[in-house]
Image 1 (tube, rainbow, N blue to C red):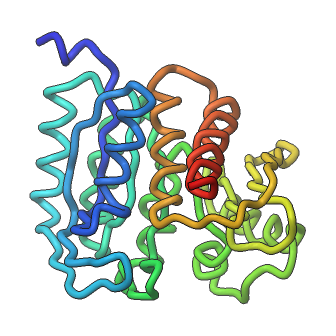
Image 2: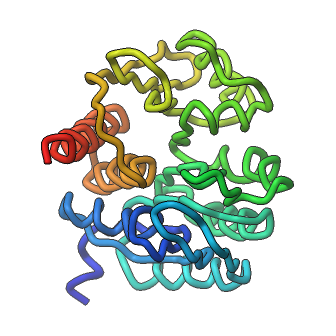
Length: 253
Protein backbone atom coordinates (compact mmCIF):
# COMPACT_ATOMS: atom_id res chain seq x y z
CA UNK A 1 0.00 0.00 0.00
CA UNK A 2 2.93 2.36 0.66
CA UNK A 3 4.05 2.09 -2.97
CA UNK A 4 0.64 3.06 -4.30
CA UNK A 5 0.89 6.60 -2.91
CA UNK A 6 4.17 7.30 -4.70
CA UNK A 7 4.11 8.58 -8.29
CA UNK A 8 4.92 5.92 -10.89
CA UNK A 9 5.70 5.98 -14.58
CA UNK A 10 3.96 3.20 -16.48
CA UNK A 11 6.42 1.97 -19.10
CA UNK A 12 4.83 0.38 -22.17
CA UNK A 13 7.35 -1.18 -24.55
CA UNK A 14 9.49 -4.07 -25.66
CA UNK A 15 12.33 -5.91 -23.99
CA UNK A 16 15.94 -5.78 -25.16
CA UNK A 17 17.95 -8.80 -24.05
CA UNK A 18 21.23 -6.84 -24.37
CA UNK A 19 19.97 -4.28 -21.83
CA UNK A 20 20.99 -1.39 -24.07
CA UNK A 21 17.54 -0.10 -24.95
CA UNK A 22 13.85 -0.81 -24.43
CA UNK A 23 12.34 -1.28 -21.01
CA UNK A 24 15.73 -1.99 -19.41
CA UNK A 25 16.92 1.50 -20.35
CA UNK A 26 13.56 3.00 -19.37
CA UNK A 27 13.60 1.53 -15.86
CA UNK A 28 17.24 2.50 -15.34
CA UNK A 29 16.56 6.10 -16.38
CA UNK A 30 13.33 6.65 -14.45
CA UNK A 31 14.73 5.03 -11.30
CA UNK A 32 17.85 7.23 -11.41
CA UNK A 33 15.55 10.29 -11.34
CA UNK A 34 13.89 8.90 -8.22
CA UNK A 35 10.56 7.79 -9.67
CA UNK A 36 9.12 4.29 -9.51
CA UNK A 37 8.07 2.27 -12.54
CA UNK A 38 5.45 -0.28 -13.45
CA UNK A 39 5.32 -2.19 -16.73
CA UNK A 40 3.31 -3.38 -19.68
CA UNK A 41 5.39 -5.49 -22.06
CA UNK A 42 4.49 -5.36 -25.76
CA UNK A 43 7.16 -7.58 -27.31
CA UNK A 44 10.13 -9.76 -26.47
CA UNK A 45 13.21 -9.25 -28.63
CA UNK A 46 16.38 -11.27 -28.96
CA UNK A 47 19.13 -8.65 -29.34
CA UNK A 48 22.81 -8.03 -28.98
CA UNK A 49 24.26 -4.53 -29.14
CA UNK A 50 24.74 -5.04 -32.88
CA UNK A 51 21.66 -6.82 -34.21
CA UNK A 52 18.07 -7.87 -33.58
CA UNK A 53 17.80 -11.62 -34.07
CA UNK A 54 14.15 -12.27 -33.30
CA UNK A 55 10.95 -10.49 -32.22
CA UNK A 56 7.88 -12.04 -30.59
CA UNK A 57 4.79 -9.87 -30.17
CA UNK A 58 2.43 -10.20 -27.21
CA UNK A 59 -1.32 -10.44 -27.67
CA UNK A 60 -2.95 -6.98 -27.74
CA UNK A 61 -5.44 -7.92 -25.03
CA UNK A 62 -2.59 -8.98 -22.76
CA UNK A 63 -0.86 -5.62 -23.29
CA UNK A 64 -4.04 -3.75 -22.36
CA UNK A 65 -4.62 -5.99 -19.32
CA UNK A 66 -1.08 -5.29 -18.09
CA UNK A 67 -1.68 -1.56 -18.41
CA UNK A 68 -4.97 -1.67 -16.54
CA UNK A 69 -3.48 -3.82 -13.77
CA UNK A 70 -0.55 -1.41 -13.35
CA UNK A 71 -2.94 1.56 -13.24
CA UNK A 72 -5.06 -0.18 -10.61
CA UNK A 73 -2.07 -1.14 -8.48
CA UNK A 74 -0.19 2.17 -8.50
CA UNK A 75 -0.49 5.94 -8.58
CA UNK A 76 0.53 6.33 -12.23
CA UNK A 77 1.46 9.97 -12.87
CA UNK A 78 2.84 9.57 -16.41
CA UNK A 79 3.12 6.94 -19.13
CA UNK A 80 6.11 6.31 -21.37
CA UNK A 81 5.39 4.38 -24.57
CA UNK A 82 8.10 2.83 -26.71
CA UNK A 83 8.02 -0.19 -29.03
CA UNK A 84 4.48 -1.14 -30.06
CA UNK A 85 5.22 -3.51 -32.95
CA UNK A 86 1.76 -3.91 -34.53
CA UNK A 87 -1.38 -1.96 -35.39
CA UNK A 88 -3.38 -4.23 -33.08
CA UNK A 89 -1.17 -3.41 -30.10
CA UNK A 90 -1.41 0.30 -30.96
CA UNK A 91 -5.21 0.05 -30.90
CA UNK A 92 -5.12 -1.75 -27.53
CA UNK A 93 -2.85 0.89 -25.97
CA UNK A 94 -4.98 3.71 -27.40
CA UNK A 95 -8.11 2.16 -25.88
CA UNK A 96 -6.54 2.29 -22.41
CA UNK A 97 -5.33 5.88 -22.87
CA UNK A 98 -8.88 6.91 -23.71
CA UNK A 99 -9.91 5.68 -20.24
CA UNK A 100 -7.33 7.88 -18.45
CA UNK A 101 -7.09 11.23 -20.29
CA UNK A 102 -5.77 12.92 -17.15
CA UNK A 103 -2.49 10.92 -17.24
CA UNK A 104 0.10 12.41 -19.63
CA UNK A 105 1.63 9.93 -22.08
CA UNK A 106 4.98 10.37 -23.83
CA UNK A 107 5.34 8.44 -27.08
CA UNK A 108 8.79 7.61 -28.42
CA UNK A 109 7.80 6.36 -31.90
CA UNK A 110 10.13 3.37 -32.19
CA UNK A 111 10.15 2.40 -35.87
CA UNK A 112 13.52 0.70 -36.37
CA UNK A 113 16.40 -0.56 -34.25
CA UNK A 114 19.83 1.08 -34.31
CA UNK A 115 20.97 -1.79 -36.54
CA UNK A 116 18.16 -1.09 -39.01
CA UNK A 117 15.67 -3.87 -38.14
CA UNK A 118 12.03 -2.77 -38.42
CA UNK A 119 10.38 -2.73 -34.98
CA UNK A 120 6.99 -1.49 -36.18
CA UNK A 121 5.10 -3.26 -38.93
CA UNK A 122 4.68 -1.14 -42.08
CA UNK A 123 0.89 -1.00 -41.88
CA UNK A 124 1.04 0.19 -38.28
CA UNK A 125 2.50 3.64 -38.99
CA UNK A 126 -0.87 4.97 -40.16
CA UNK A 127 -2.56 3.51 -37.07
CA UNK A 128 0.01 5.16 -34.82
CA UNK A 129 -0.58 8.55 -36.42
CA UNK A 130 -4.37 8.29 -36.44
CA UNK A 131 -5.22 6.40 -33.24
CA UNK A 132 -2.40 6.98 -30.77
CA UNK A 133 -0.46 10.16 -31.39
CA UNK A 134 -3.40 12.55 -30.75
CA UNK A 135 -3.87 10.95 -27.31
CA UNK A 136 -0.29 11.59 -26.20
CA UNK A 137 0.94 14.68 -24.40
CA UNK A 138 4.19 14.57 -26.37
CA UNK A 139 5.66 12.61 -29.29
CA UNK A 140 9.48 12.47 -29.56
CA UNK A 141 10.68 11.47 -33.05
CA UNK A 142 14.26 11.81 -34.24
CA UNK A 143 14.83 13.23 -37.72
CA UNK A 144 14.70 9.81 -39.39
CA UNK A 145 11.48 8.84 -37.61
CA UNK A 146 9.96 12.23 -38.41
CA UNK A 147 10.61 11.75 -42.13
CA UNK A 148 9.07 8.27 -42.04
CA UNK A 149 6.00 9.54 -40.18
CA UNK A 150 5.29 12.17 -42.83
CA UNK A 151 6.36 9.90 -45.72
CA UNK A 152 9.04 12.33 -46.85
CA UNK A 153 12.76 12.63 -47.36
CA UNK A 154 15.01 13.48 -44.42
CA UNK A 155 14.67 17.18 -43.60
CA UNK A 156 17.73 19.07 -44.91
CA UNK A 157 17.81 21.56 -42.03
CA UNK A 158 15.95 22.77 -38.93
CA UNK A 159 13.42 24.74 -40.95
CA UNK A 160 12.60 21.64 -42.97
CA UNK A 161 12.20 19.60 -39.79
CA UNK A 162 9.82 22.21 -38.35
CA UNK A 163 7.72 22.07 -41.53
CA UNK A 164 7.53 18.26 -41.27
CA UNK A 165 6.63 18.55 -37.60
CA UNK A 166 3.88 21.01 -38.45
CA UNK A 167 2.29 18.32 -40.64
CA UNK A 168 1.90 16.12 -37.59
CA UNK A 169 0.51 18.97 -35.49
CA UNK A 170 -2.03 19.63 -38.23
CA UNK A 171 -2.98 15.96 -38.05
CA UNK A 172 -3.88 16.27 -34.37
CA UNK A 173 -0.64 15.74 -32.43
CA UNK A 174 -0.68 17.81 -29.22
CA UNK A 175 3.05 18.48 -28.98
CA UNK A 176 6.15 17.28 -30.78
CA UNK A 177 9.78 17.17 -29.71
CA UNK A 178 12.00 16.84 -32.78
CA UNK A 179 15.31 15.39 -31.65
CA UNK A 180 18.39 16.65 -33.45
CA UNK A 181 20.81 13.89 -32.54
CA UNK A 182 20.98 12.65 -36.15
CA UNK A 183 21.79 16.10 -37.53
CA UNK A 184 25.31 17.41 -38.12
CA UNK A 185 27.20 20.41 -36.81
CA UNK A 186 28.74 21.40 -33.48
CA UNK A 187 25.40 21.86 -31.68
CA UNK A 188 22.67 19.32 -30.90
CA UNK A 189 19.31 21.06 -30.99
CA UNK A 190 15.91 19.61 -30.10
CA UNK A 191 12.80 21.55 -31.07
CA UNK A 192 9.54 21.57 -29.12
CA UNK A 193 6.52 22.30 -31.32
CA UNK A 194 2.99 23.07 -30.11
CA UNK A 195 0.05 24.46 -32.03
CA UNK A 196 -0.20 28.25 -32.07
CA UNK A 197 3.07 28.62 -30.16
CA UNK A 198 6.55 29.55 -31.28
CA UNK A 199 9.04 26.65 -31.47
CA UNK A 200 11.25 26.27 -28.41
CA UNK A 201 14.83 25.09 -28.97
CA UNK A 202 16.89 23.12 -26.46
CA UNK A 203 20.55 23.31 -27.37
CA UNK A 204 23.75 21.63 -26.17
CA UNK A 205 27.15 21.02 -27.72
CA UNK A 206 27.32 17.87 -29.83
CA UNK A 207 29.40 15.14 -28.18
CA UNK A 208 31.48 12.55 -29.99
CA UNK A 209 30.16 9.80 -27.74
CA UNK A 210 27.24 7.65 -28.82
CA UNK A 211 25.07 5.30 -26.81
CA UNK A 212 22.30 2.87 -27.68
CA UNK A 213 18.96 3.67 -26.15
CA UNK A 214 19.33 7.45 -25.93
CA UNK A 215 15.85 7.86 -27.44
CA UNK A 216 14.41 5.59 -24.75
CA UNK A 217 16.39 7.48 -22.12
CA UNK A 218 15.24 10.93 -23.25
CA UNK A 219 11.52 10.07 -23.40
CA UNK A 220 11.72 8.21 -20.08
CA UNK A 221 13.45 11.15 -18.41
CA UNK A 222 10.70 13.49 -19.67
CA UNK A 223 8.04 11.13 -18.33
CA UNK A 224 9.79 10.95 -14.94
CA UNK A 225 9.89 14.75 -14.73
CA UNK A 226 6.20 14.98 -15.65
CA UNK A 227 5.46 12.40 -12.95
CA UNK A 228 7.13 14.81 -10.53
CA UNK A 229 4.55 17.42 -11.61
CA UNK A 230 6.92 19.58 -13.65
CA UNK A 231 5.58 21.53 -16.65
CA UNK A 232 6.30 20.10 -20.10
CA UNK A 233 8.91 22.65 -21.15
CA UNK A 234 10.80 22.29 -17.87
CA UNK A 235 10.58 18.49 -18.12
CA UNK A 236 12.13 18.51 -21.60
CA UNK A 237 14.90 20.87 -20.48
CA UNK A 238 15.85 18.74 -17.47
CA UNK A 239 15.62 15.52 -19.51
CA UNK A 240 17.93 16.87 -22.20
CA UNK A 241 20.48 17.86 -19.56
CA UNK A 242 20.18 14.37 -18.05
CA UNK A 243 20.97 12.69 -21.40
CA UNK A 244 23.77 15.17 -22.15
CA UNK A 245 25.46 14.44 -18.83
CA UNK A 246 25.19 10.68 -19.43
CA UNK A 247 26.84 11.04 -22.85
CA UNK A 248 29.44 13.43 -21.46
CA UNK A 249 30.36 10.89 -18.80
CA UNK A 250 30.70 8.15 -21.41
CA UNK A 251 32.87 10.37 -23.61
CA UNK A 252 35.22 10.93 -20.67
CA UNK A 253 35.64 7.21 -19.95
